Length: 215
Image (cartoon, rainbow, N blue to C red; front, side, top):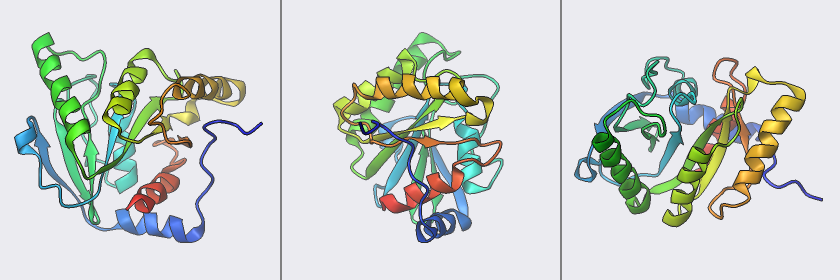
């Protein structure tokens, strides 16, 4: 029987080079957005990264771009409450606020959740959301909440497992199985997983190639 949500196959040399070139040039922070009227013009393809607080999102964006300080990593989960836009080649890479366990007042969290929903459902140039899941835990209920939001917004999402270097063998397999079981319930889920480690560089060229292939 064919496995559902297998790990993506290693791209061929041409695709890997296309991904390398996309992120080899100048990558710049454009702006942080706190309201829909602050969004930059929808004049290019966008991909965005979503993940619960402390999943390693900033570290992965920095690894993709090869610039350590581009996306701000924080030791305080939930500190970043803006939608942050970066350019990479001719696309936007968008860093969404971390969800879950935010150390912020309820009113602030509610406002930022509303912005998130408006952005996800209303941005015509958004081609794919990469939902980051910590391999040490697998998909959690809070991850399924964002997946359900993406289902209802009709936005394709692809799961990227982070910190895969922290697990081996049966432990990693159990985490993948848990995540695959969660994904089976979500019609907007892209049918392949990408396994990454920002620290080791695992999967980063594959993720670059995947993004470059979306254009």
